[in-house]
Amino acid sequence: MPARTVLIQDRSKLFRSSLAVLLDAQEDIRVLSQVATAEELERATIAMEPDIVVFEVSSTPWDSEGVARRLGELEKRPRLVGVGRSPAGAVKSRLDGGAVARHDPFEEFLGAITGVLRSDDSALETPAGDGPLTEAELHVLGLLSSGLTTNQIARRMGRSPRSVRALRERVLKRLGAQSGAQAAAEGIRLGLLGPRVPPGATGPHVRGRPYRPPELRVRRWDGRGARLLIAHESRILTAAVELVLGEAAKVIYHTVFASAAVAVSDVLVPELVVTGDLLSDGPVEHHLRALMRSGTRMLVVTDQPEPRRAVTLLRGGCSGVSDSDSDIHEVAAAALTVAGGGSVIPPVVAELLLAEWRTKDGPIGRRESELRLTDRELEVLRAMADGLATKAIARRLNMAAKTAENHKTRIFQKMGVRGHAEAISLLYRGGDLAPEAACGAMAEATHNIRPARGDRRASV
Amino acid sequence: MSDQPVRINTQEVVWREVGDEVVILHMTTATYLTINGSGRLLWNLLAEGATPEALAQTLVGEYDIGFEQAEADVRTFLSSLTECSLLEKPR
Image 1 (cartoon, one colour):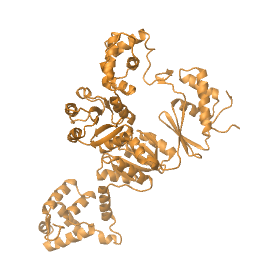
Image 2: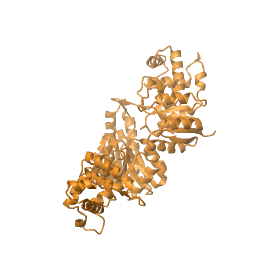
Image 3: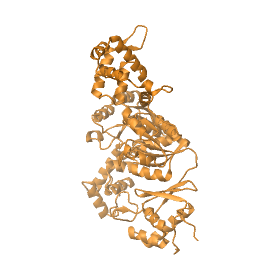
Image 4: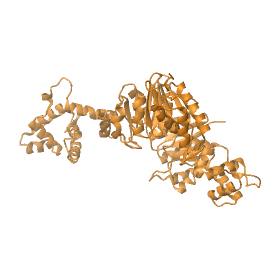
């Protein structure tokens, strides 16, 4: 049987690329493409005619109903699986494979996809018979009595929600019931079901807690590759990192709690802890020190790649910061680099650090006194920050325009910058200037930039 | 079932309770292990030293299971701990 084709849409590059590598690793599934927007999704669906489309359904103002409707009207209609918790009813009714929450394990996504791929639609055409309930009907009845929803039953049975709905209707009709609860009661009365059992329970239990025999799970490490602990809401990310890195690394533990990551890190001392911004028990910043106290290195995959936040994390001891708008292969490579003792610093942060280094310590080989701005130079710099051009600076500080020009040249040399805009930007980044003042000065500086003839450098 | 108390091999084993689990590192064999919820109850008793019978009684007290099942489950559990060198050797 040829591989079924899948198209993935999600605005998070990390999520869609992670899901893509995991699905592509399945024998009978081939990912045709992964796209970010609704427009790209519709174009790609028309061009590639995938069997299945996996797309975002619960973000606002995302028009997921519109997308589902338009895809449903295509001549070769793909089966639809949603990504997101609790999609609106109008969207839900159009999803053949139901919706899977973004942070669910990969198995849930795979279950939803294989569920719609199964040729189980024959169940839809079979009329309700008069004989005993079929095995599938009994299974649905049992799961209904456990309080599971249609989508949950579909995943549990590996069927599409549509076929489960059809089976449910048949069960209700045959038992003369109006609801799942009534059907369950009737099922118990007729001896078709045992007493009600809570979902997940596998044996005797007290106080709602199922009993599972005490079990020891052994996870041997063969000494090859780096040991990673992943503390991140996304189980998809964890599975994808493990798949991409193969023998180069082993994910020894996954958790969504920073406190659990701290405890495990203390005991297992992995080479690397990979975290997101926010864990179930708070922002990662609150746990940095504890997470690294065993000597492990840290990589934060952040949704907030602003330079200042990245700098905060790096100053807090992290060895790497990776933008969550990266491909899974980039994040996996970053993890290997950091686990191996290297650092991963986003280019924009490297630039900022370089600027700070120049301001505070100066280039190697130059004495600090040579680099420190004099009082007069600082006055000129502040006037520049106020947005004044050279002649206006000269007027304010009661000096010749030529002298003001010379001061500016020296300021640029000492700060290691090429012009007015960069100097003000550096001043702002260094925290010595209020943002409003910097913005005004930057606007002025940008306005003043004129490329000199034969010279691409800005002249202010 | 033996009436001799059994103890964790604390010389070679470190562990932390994480939620409902116990995460364990055996420092000599570089093996890391996890124990589930009901096993966590037993592990805490084993840290102090406990007889297999006391462990089985604990399971009976906590869960709605009979002594026979508890005894069998404890035996299997202790044997897996012994295989992984997590228990002190009997003197």
